[in-house]
Length: 153
Image (spheres, rainbow, N blue to C red):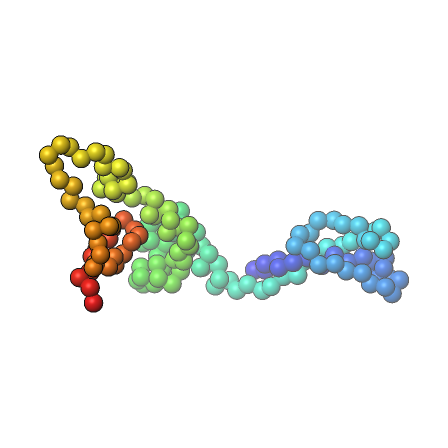
């Protein structure tokens, strides 16, 4: 198999005249020669690709499409499914994000993000104001976990 890295566009008329003109582009679109106005002929610059590299691609694409790992193992004729998932099953960041998004929203996280509202009459607020913390150091100020207090060094 071959994979196109870039295209070299060459003017045949300028080459025949002894003044070769060529340009390097990412696509194979037809372009005019800036010297003589004739068509530039695109030629693909390719890199070799081994047939074994296709196994990686096939296994990854099948696993991304949620094909059972045991079926992919059978297609690739591996003895162990760990070979299939460990060697050929390449995970991409988008795959990991998609897996996290499958989790249902946690009800406790929503309650942490909401304003608790006014404290009912006769109930004391158990939170510590930052003005009350003179001798205590805050260990953690961000995240979903409440800040923990240290008793000093």
